Length: 511
Image (tube, rainbow, N blue to C red):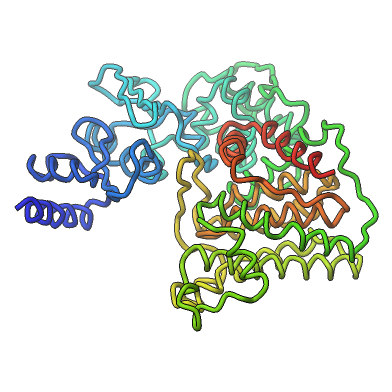
């Protein structure tokens, strides 16, 4: 009887999912169905009266389902509660969406057009939604991103305060540089009324960015039209801008990759590092890599959640894994991963050898290398008919979310621009340690593939290390928690220092 009730509830849930997506109001289902679906872990409660559909295998406390569906919830909830055109994210949160900052803010702030007193709504993962009425500052024209209403970028810049420049300098620089013609900002300043402080702030910001002509245009035109002389001031608290004054930004996503690289490389350059180029005995290097392979494969695969043994890894290494002949060797997820890791490791050794013999820098070959590594990692799964051969061609063609992380990788449309910028940066950076640390971090930040990103990022890191005479480092299974935490700090809290110190510590261990 219980199975029949659950089956009927699941059938109703499927209809809702097909029509509404993964987020819906409880009124769409009867109380009995909601009860049994909750008991069987098919529903993730967001706020009172709102649910998200989840897999019953989702572990308690896992908020990945929330990050996947947060913007869909905001769109449905805000439209339903305040009306289609009755709300707008505040200027700061609007700019974060314009500049494609993927992290969901701890507090999303919403301006209401009319009829609602201020309120705070508690959300999953200790997040909140703060809504307040402000007819005076409600925008005349609404823009939209990720299904929610936001300020136009020009209006948001005019309405932003000094805190936005202090706390989010990268996003503010991207936003300012994305405006090719500042006449749109001047129009917004005039249209919004007396905005003397904003005009002075934006004029000073463009002066700081090296766009003196645009800065003068804002201050002079505003003064002539409003009749109020302004004194430009610089709201940024950085020594110098992240981007060159004449540089055109390819896209907000590529700009974010470049901005993070430049910002974090400055921190890395402050280290008094021992990572310097050393002479390499190629024969000795290859011997050392062979010696390290088993432990490297064991720990790298274990970090990714595969259950492998050193015996299985050695068996594959010596060509003794024969699933067609041996019943015990039948393809399993773990064995296929171990086989793919061996093939990728051999490909990496071959590439390192070629580069050393031809005196070519391996970072100049990362574009080709990472694609080869991806194919090698998952070719065994194609051969086992688990994946299609076409799955190994190109980057991911779908969105991806990282379990246990607040970081949301760029959407599929942004990967090509982001990866092209990544390859440019890893070639052009003169600091070996920056290439090592950011070569790993930024690859994982973009997350260009559905799977294998962590393994490939560690391969890239180590290939650069050994190509400059440094040790191949192994991040061990029992270091996983710390490793993930320091990556999260860099991805979501603008802090590369913990990851930088972790990698430098691992390098020193191997010296």
